[in-house]
Length: 173
Ligand SMILES: [Zn+2]
Image (cartoon, rainbow, N blue to C red; front, side):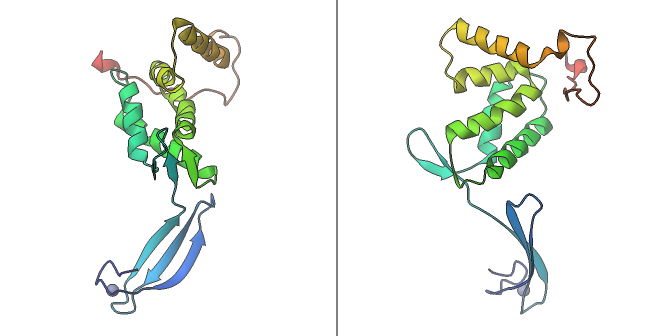
């Protein structure tokens, strides 16, 4: 590839390393012309098949904007959204498959979003899982209560099991 400093059309790989999670390779390159060094990161291109059958590259930005809509009016910071986007991308890349469906991406969003904000989670899940009736919401809420029994059992306190709950900005209220 071109040298980013002098635009020389060629460069030489001096070192290659697979990242710890095995999903990408970092290459240290040197320009034979200006001798400067730079790093490239190689990852498998990740494609998402939409419901319409159209395929497009996975976009963390799109994940974040979808979740941001569900978080409207909720005490969720841009920083938290960015972290969620990163977690979702890491999760879908960790599957090792080069093609995903929008359904797979939605599924990867549900877990981290549930940890982030339960109301936003229900909004997102209602669209993603196509809730039609109040019963669907009720079932989802029952599911949430069953999965998060800590609130109902104040006596039980497992060390290290404290969920990371984002602290809402009380000043905004
Ligand atoms: Zn150069």
